[in-house]
Structures are given as structure tokens and as C-alpha cells.
Length: 233
Image 1 (cartoon, rainbow, N blue to C red):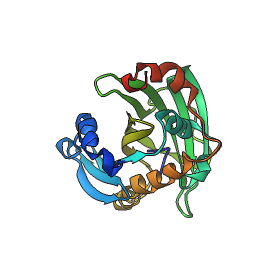
Image 2: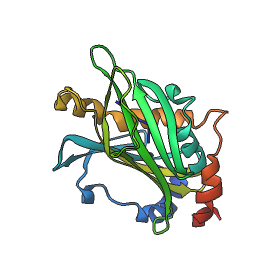
Image 3: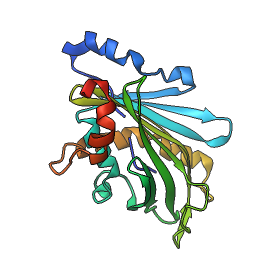
């Protein structure tokens, strides 16, 4: 299963010395309990066990050849999600308490006999000035703001989700971590097996999606977030 979204690593060899200094502020996964899984085409993937969940978290990082604004636009573009998100069914922005705090709905068309899954979650965008990065936090809604479950679906839960996007010239270094429980009767071992491949597959397709001609810079990034990033002022 793949939601919305996103992780990238590697830069030109000629920039190697500069790269080491630039990435000094990027946290080490292993110090946070993450297990290294793979490194392919500049995409590193990880997995983590949580004491309060049988489902394992997944994550990854990589460099993507696009600005932060374009990556955020792709993440928020519902009309074309079927082009890069596996098993995508539908998505909708349900509410905006502010441009940087949004209530989102997304559903996935699962293969028979698995019941389709849906998620209702808050996305919160902000700049971490210490990291000089844009952070997108996601978590499922646990109050009355969530609409009723769509007929024929099972509602899963996003326990933790975060994208951290670091400006690297005209590119972006992205780290993402994701812990989600699809609920229902799916065996935990199967959930962990399927979600293990999420980072690699998702970022491979994201890298392709951000290069398409119709991709723009997300207006909320240009207006509210970009001015707070030191490297882009």
C-alpha cells in the first residue's frame, strides 16, 4: 500500500566535498532505531519496530531533481495521483483550517478479496528553522472532524507520518517516514511485507512525476514557506 507520498539521496560527484557539509544537519536513521534495508539508484530505505504497534514503520531518503515547491505541488495534486501512487482510487481535501493545515481524504483500490482502504488525516506544513527544511507532518483524525467511512471501505490509521524537505540548490533532499495500520483482518506479516517496498517504489514514481510539464510550484510554499528558508531568500 502506498499513500500519498515521499525520499531521495545522492548528488553530483563534483559536489562531493560540499555535499558532506550540506548533509551534516540530516539525522542518522540508525540513531533513531531504524534498520537499513537497501540503497538503490540513490534511494535509501529503512524499517523500524515500534513498541505500541505490530506494524513496522517504513522510511527512506534520496535526492530528487526538483524544487521543494514542485514536490509539494505533486503531493497535493489529487487530479494526477493515479499516475504515480499505486492502487490509488480517490482523494479529496475535506477542510482547510489554514493553507498550511489541511484535512485530507484518500482511498485505495485493493485487489480482490481485500477490502478497499481509506484514510482521513491532517497535513501540517511548517519550516524547521534549525534544519532549514520544510516539514510535513501527517496523522489520522481522531475526533469528530472525520466523516463517516465510505460504504465498502475500511478506514486505516496513519499513526505517524513525516516528510522533511531540504533545499539543495535547484534540487531537494527528502527524508520520509511512515507508520500506518490498514486495520481490518489483514495478517500483520503481509502488511509489513507489502509496506516494506513502499519507499523505493513511491520515490521512483515521484521522481518521474515531478518532471512532467504540468507540474507547478505549490502556491502555499511560494507564499508562506519559501520566505522562511535561508537558502532560498
